[in-house]
Length: 247
Image 1 (tube, rainbow, N blue to C red):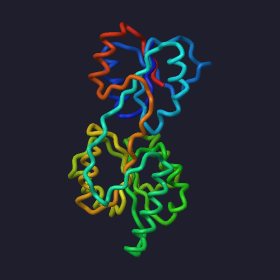
Image 2 (image 1 turned 90 degrees about the vertical axis):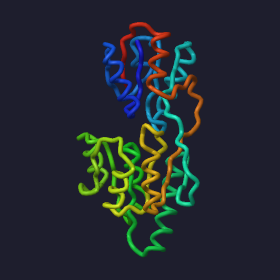
Image 3 (image 1 turned 90 degrees about the horizontal axis):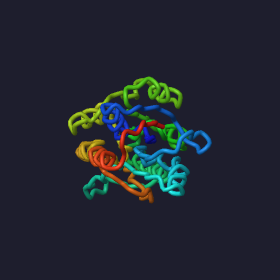
Image 4 (image 1 turned 45 degrees about the vertical axis):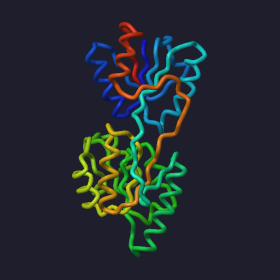
């Protein structure tokens, strides 16, 4: 049995590849030792860096039993040097930086500030609950899935400010969206070239947007691969005909 963690683009891509090989996928949202009916032969962590911490107990459980735990993680994006880019390494830093940028821009421009969010739905609640949320316009770009649109509605995002679109997005599309919504600040994460980080940053810089960039936190996750192809090669060489459970 192989356990597959995550709902990121990398996880979805990997799921497609595994299904094409005839491997069974079962989707779940969490894991505990008590709910593990079988000992896996491999665990693949394709979750987003901001959510992978919740699987730390599983990683420790695997280490104790000698079970391979592989982290699928895109390489970091080479970010240009710019005074408009503000790197942070966790959500607490992101919220603090956002507040500082909002306060500064509000004083400079004398009007409400618009934040264009491309970090998905995971941290929307914390953003909506922040001290600056009532004084800004939040525009959120998410995948066109009903549950994600519903989540945006639940945290108070206005329907007109929900951009439900499937990427990847070119620089031109990003630029058009940022301009259409009158964005002042881009909140994004470093999701690598495959996640379009470079095109988002390039478009935002052309328009003079300030960018709060959530960088990847370095964690000790054992074996790490940077592409689905690399991971599948490892599976071909080490794992044979294993049914798969997706969490």
